[in-house]
Amino acid sequence: MNKGVCLIGPGGGSGLQAYARQVAEELEARGASAWTLSARGPFLVTAPLVFLTCAFRLVLLAANGRVDCVHLVVAEIGSVWRKGLLAALGRALGLRVVIHLHGPDLAAAARDAGWATRAAMRMGARLADVNLALSRDLARFLTEDLGAPAERVAILRNALPDAPPVPRLAPARPGRDRPLRVLFVAPMTRSKGARAVVQALAMLRAHGIEAEAVLAGSGPERAHARGEARRLGVAADFPGRISAMEADDLMEWADVLAHPSSREGLPLTLLQALRAGLPVVAAPAGAIGEALPQGDGLVHIPARDAAGLARALERLANDPQWMMSLGEAARLVFENRFRMDRHVDRLEAHYGWTAPQPRGLELPVQPA
Image (cartoon, rainbow, N blue to C red; front, side, top):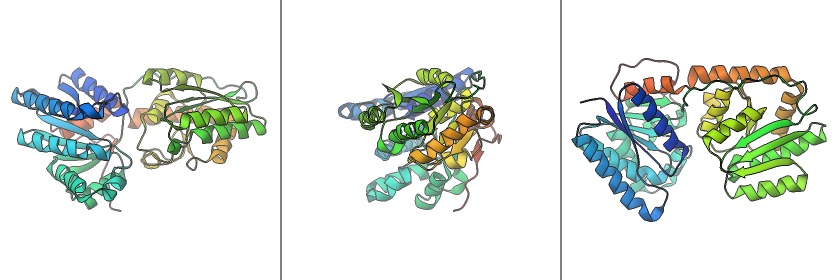
C-alpha cells in the first residue's frame, strides 16, 4: 500500500479546512497521497448527506488501498459524534486513526454536555492511535477526562507554509510623522475585542499619537465596533471577512497586529503575522500564552483591555527600533516553530510513516 491519508475537517471554508488543504499539499509534494473531505458542510439541512458521502468516500479510498490513515480534525463539540463515528469506521477498515483537537472550548463544552456526548468523545479518544492536542489544557483533558493513554497523546501546534518575510523599514516616528497602522483580523464576536481596538486608538489620539486601523471580519460585533469608531472619530475601515491572501496584503501595510481576544486556540492570523515579520500585541488566551511567550515577536496584554492595548501601541509608536526588533523576532519564531514542512515531519511520524524526529514543534504532555 502506498502512503496515503484522508484528512477530514469541518468544511465550510473554515481556517481548519484551509489547514487540511495545506497539509495535503505538503504531503503530496513529498510523494504521498492525501485527500481532504468535509464531514458536515456549510448547511445544517444537508449535513446528514454530506456526512454519509464522506463516510462512503473513506470506505472507497480504504478498499482501493489509497489510504492507510485517517486524520480527523475536531473544532467544536457539535462535530464529536461525526468524528467519533468516523474514528470507529476507520478502525473497522484497518486504518490508523489520528484525532486532532483544535477547538479552544472543547474541554469546557464537553464537561457541560450530556453523558452521551462525553461517551462519544471517550470512544474516539480511546479508538485513536494518536490524539493530537493544540494546547496542554486539551492534552490534559484527553488523558484525565477522556481516559486516553498518555503515550498516545501529543501536543502539536498549528503551522503555515513558508513565505518570504515582508521587507520593513523603521519609520521615523509612526503615529506622528504618519499614522500608526493597526490591523485586526478575526471574527467579529464580542470575545475577540474589536471594540477594544477602536477605543485604544481613541486613547492614542488623546496622547498625541495618530493611528488608523483596518478591522477585518464579519459577525454581530462589526456594527457595534463601526458605530463606536464613528462616535469616537477614529479612522477605521471595516472591510468584512477577508481571505488569507488579503490578510497577507494588509500585513504588508500594517505596523502591528492587534489581537486582544479572550477566547482562542492558536489562530492562524497570528502565525501569518509572525511569518510576515509583523509585531503582535495580543492577549495570552488559549494556546497563545504557552506557545508564544512575551517577547517572541509579541507583547502580551489583558484580554479586551483597551487601556492595556493603547499603552502597548504607544510604546511601539515611541520606539520604532523596538518595533523593528519585535518584527525580526516574530519572523525567527515562525521559522523555528510554525513552518508547515516541520509540522508535516511530525504528522508523518504520527501517521506511522516515519520514525519520530523531534524538531521543537511538539511538546510532551505535562501533568497538571
